[in-house]
Amino acid sequence: MKKVTLIIPCFNEEESIPLLYKELSRVFSTVRDSYSFTMLFVDDGSTDQTLEIIKAVAARNSSVKYISFSRNFGKEAAMLAGMEYADGDYIGIIDADLQHSPDLIPGMLDALTIEGYDVAAARRTDRAGEGRVKSSLSGEFYKVFNRISDIKIDDNAQDYRIMKRKVVDALLEMKEVNRFSKGLFAYAGFKVKWFPHENQERAAGQTKWSIKGLARYAIDGILGLTTSPLRLSLYTGCVSVIAGLILALYGLIASIVSASVLSHMYALLLSALLFVGGLIMVFIGIAGEYLGRAFVEIKHRPVYIISETNAGKSVADLDF
Image 1 (cartoon, rainbow, N blue to C red):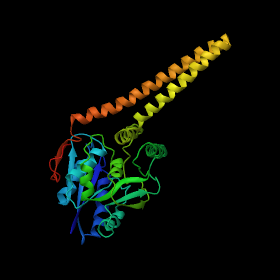
Image 2: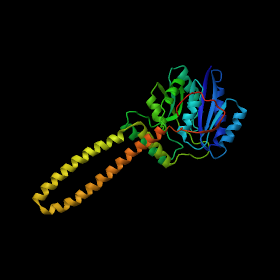
Image 3: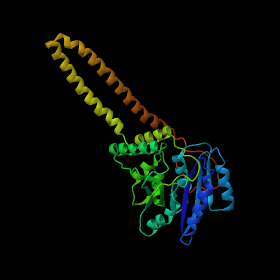
Image 4: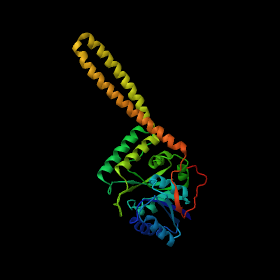
């Protein structure tokens, strides 16, 4: 019998946990003859009663495990911790808010066990339950990312997926601190079956994503998986040099032909200097972002710190 570990990142989801547990139990009961299940809740430093509710569920059901962080480290850290501690043959990730329908799980497992896929992942067909601004910004981000990166990410792909152990092992070999899992999933490759999925309204509570958080996530994704912004500074510098030479030549000719044109050239030159100076500052900032990330990586600080858990770590000697 194959063992399935389902990772559930949580941050202030006290209202959603009982509803999710009920739905997962219902779905698991339909395939218990073929699989054994463990729910691995990762409490990402919640400030409400999320951890207490998870502990109460775990006290009634030994197949419910939990990891609680010492503070909020973010969803990426929660997914990483779940993958490190998961001991299943198949490892899944699902959100706690029921926007990911548990009813897809039996079909996902069939794709792995019967059809021979390595990953079964959800791809949304709409963005119900998301704000219009978030939806628009997310779509534009993936368009930009796919233009500048060799790794292509479907803008409708979700973290909701079930993976074979070898896929998770490959993901854990990627030891960066600044993680962008959607990009890492795409980078790892493997044979993926996509499941069309209608996004659901949150079962309870409010979304934890802010515009600031989304912007930081987007920057981590771009800088973590491509060096194209650094290349862009080189290309822009070359264009600026050529434009400067043309402008200098034009100014020289204009000063010979007409003295009045020269006064206008000074204003044009000043504008050009300010523009190029601004570009230089932007590209220094981009280089600084890359350098800052390198600084964080070489310190080898842990991605997360655990306050308490009832789960035993399944992956030994990982350097996170």
